[in-house]
Structures are given as C-alpha cells and as structure tokens.
Image (cartoon, rainbow, N blue to C red; front, side):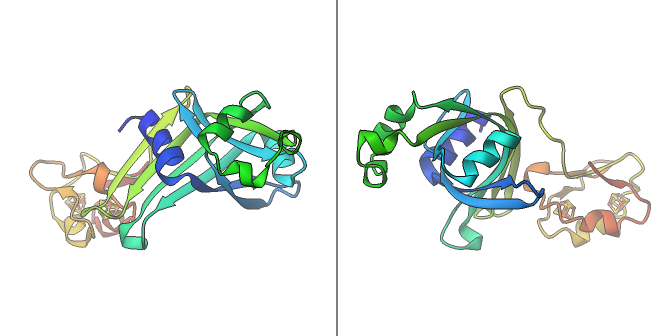
Length: 206
Ligand code: SF4
Ligand code: SF4
C-alpha cells in the first residue's frame, strides 16, 4: 500500500486513535482523538481551543499516534505515525461535521461549534504492523516530504551461512537460498534474536 492508503485506513477504517503530545515538563500525555478525514496532504482532526491538548499542539507542533483495529492481539492491525501538525482553523469544521455526523451530538449548535478548530498532520513517517497475518506483515511509509525511516535488522556480507539466525527466528523470515542470508523485511518482528545468535556479528541493526 502507498502512504495515502495508510492515511485513509486510519481515518476510514480505524478512526479512533491514541495521540501522544508532550507537556511543559517534557512528559508525554495521551488522548483519544478521532481522525476525521485524510487526503494526499495528510490527516485531519479537530479539538476545542480550551483544551490542554490544543496548547500542547500549538507549542510543539508535533505528535505521535497509534491506531489499532482488531478483536484481540492476534487479529490486530496497528498503524503508528509521528509527524508535524499545523492549525488550519475553523474553515474545515463544517466539512468534517458533514463527514462525521456524530459530532452534532457533542456540539449541537453553530454557537457551540465555534470552540473548535482543525489540525492537519501534514508531514510524517509511519509504521504498519499486521499481526493477523501469518507471518506478520510490516511496512513503513512517509508523507509530506518526510524521510522514510530505515529500521530493523539486516545481514551483511560477513555472513558464513551457519543458519543460527534462522533457527531462532520466530517468523521464519530469513531466506537461506543465497549468501549472504537475507531478512524478509516485510515479515520481520524486529525482535533481535538473529543478531544475538550470529557467531560472527554479521547481523546489524539499522
Ligand atoms: S529480528 Fe527477529 S523476526 Fe526479524 S529476522 Fe531477526 S529473528 Fe527474525
Ligand atoms: S547467524 Fe550470522 S553467519 Fe550464521 S547464517 Fe545467520 S547471519 Fe549468517
């Protein structure tokens, strides 16, 4: 999937996310926030200007979020994003209310809606993690010009093909057909077992 697909999945399929911001003491604060729309330019959500959440967004202009969907751990898909936010103001509020009519139950009048403002996550990078697949599926993505983060483990040319890494890999995602052995990144848990097991230090962490 492309970055846009992941953003659409968050707003349309999961919708309710847990967002982390940082307070004046440098400590994390979480809040449940609905992602109300998405497009090629990012994700959109709203908040009231009287909330501490609003102040934290204005001060740092940055957040991290996780959205999860599933009945239990083994049927869950999780998408996480870290990114820059900016306030767009009131103009997009009517559009977001039209797309999310339940908001009328919380802010039923035009007057009460005046407290609200829209934020856009316009640049960021993210991780997709699907535990419902066997083996698991993982992907990373970025949007708005942010660099894609290279994370995880890889096997270097010093591999001697001993197989110790494959023997301890919980996802059986180490390909042993060629030298050096290779990790199927899209199925890797990032557990680090392969690096610990390698007798010659051929596994490195990005
Ligand atoms: S980090 Fe874990 S899951 Fe990934 S290849 Fe190594 S042992 Fe397998
Ligand atoms: S444990 Fe190290 S040397 Fe052995 S196959 Fe794996 S990467 Fe290669």
